[in-house]
Image (cartoon, rainbow, N blue to C red; front, side, top):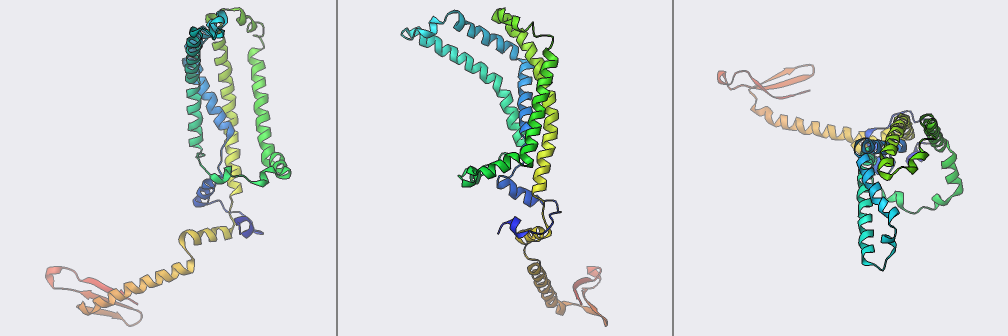
Length: 298
């Protein structure tokens, strides 16, 4: 019987315990905000663009210029030099692309790790017929979670379009002219505009990611809320049945009492309260100082 079936009819008004959250995480139920990972990617792109992307862009433009000015070097496959030129071009493009993508990739990985979302769950990738169900997919897409994700994406799209119109409304005549410039001159101009746009998109993305992270984590916490029976069941699984715990405590107390009774014959004096208590003291004279309690009990 599942937890949901066992808790039918009970109000789940208790916050999930740490063990329930960890078990859900191991089962693949994680709170991963896609907007947070997207904003991390924008952050990496902005860092690259604002720091060293200008030089990388110029070097890449100079490399690609060869393809534009001398395409025969790359199309005459019968010539051995064509292969060498093509390999050189591919290496230059690959190295430049790797430098541009390394920082965004690192930021995305850091964002996923920060959300504790790196979990490998084989059951999540196993085939299930329910995933082919039109009704289940429609429920997922058009349910509360699907609609909230759609609203977040729509708000982000509207914000990016508004930023684009605001930033480039006065530049719509200047940017097309960059196509007429030499590659070495066009790259810095386009780089400046790209940094400006990325900075604006980054600010918008961080604001949306903050809201989305709260939404995703709140939805997961609400989904994992517990009833009183859930808490009792978890307590039995993690700490044992309360009746068994009480029985173990009584046995431990009995063993401790039996050990003390074995020490009573060694006592120098036994002080007894006629009502309910007794204490056994051992004293070896002035050389040992104060008497030592070796047994006590009801």
